Length: 185
Image (tube, rainbow, N blue to C red):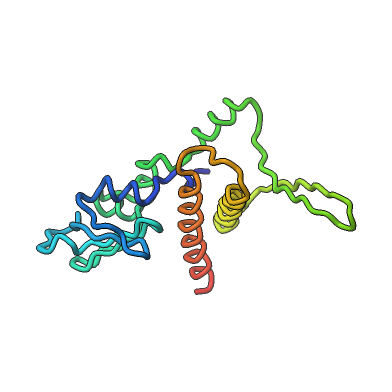
């Protein structure tokens, strides 16, 4: 089984700044304007990109979406190939190679640490998401946990990690909203 790995997507700010020449300075909500890559714009400011969430919208040709749909529309790709172009698609073969490199199966666990009446408890529960929605909720949980650690004084593991975790949280939250609204219909 293949799967989408949203945590491997580039940060929207970096992506749009490399794709759209001369973006304006973003407003308070993260939106910057530039020349639309999908049509010939007279104003050269019809394309809006949210450098925080990754969303985009063109007021001229009405193209809209996120960084994945941007690549899909620009390059005429399907979702899977657009994700592959970012290196955010993992196939069975790639997963088997990673497991072999690690020399053993990787089993993720949810860790719970709490105290009841002065007694410390530590519980590990096997975390095996079975649906896309469960996987997305796991990404949100992991990003939120890491942000909490950073805000409690833990050093970033790499430069810009906090910003990357916020991007993962925002993007994954949007995907959850899409999944939930599709289930309601």
